[in-house]
Image 1 (cartoon, rainbow, N blue to C red):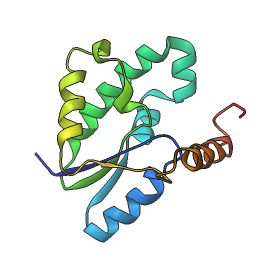
Image 2: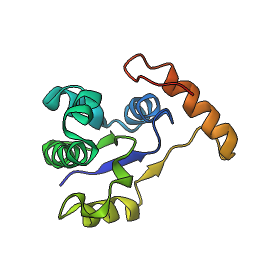
Image 3: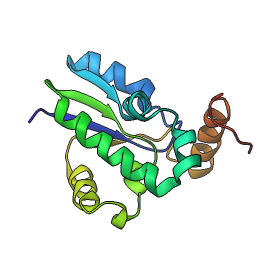
Image 4: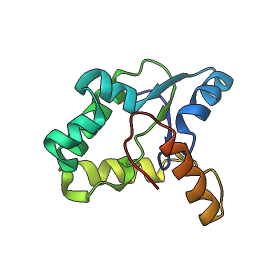
Length: 137
């Protein structure tokens, strides 16, 4: 199996911005789980609206497994923002999968600041600027 560096963090933390830069510097590939999900399943928001968050979570775990098995070379993988926070019983193997990612020395948590209020402010601002995410402060 190939080497994977997992990038985890909340939406707007910079996973899809930092990931390609890091991959290029390492000479690795870059993959974004959200992009793979949308290419297979369509809009994330539409999936959640139609089937609920638990079903989206199960589908996203299935996409992760397929994507993870498909890597032919070392890869930096940006996980979906909520991937590490799904309920443990959402999938029979999720708890083991999540634990393996958590303890992997190549898993990196991205946050835009170590200060809670600054972190929240930056993430909210970034999320509100995304046209595909409906919402307000």
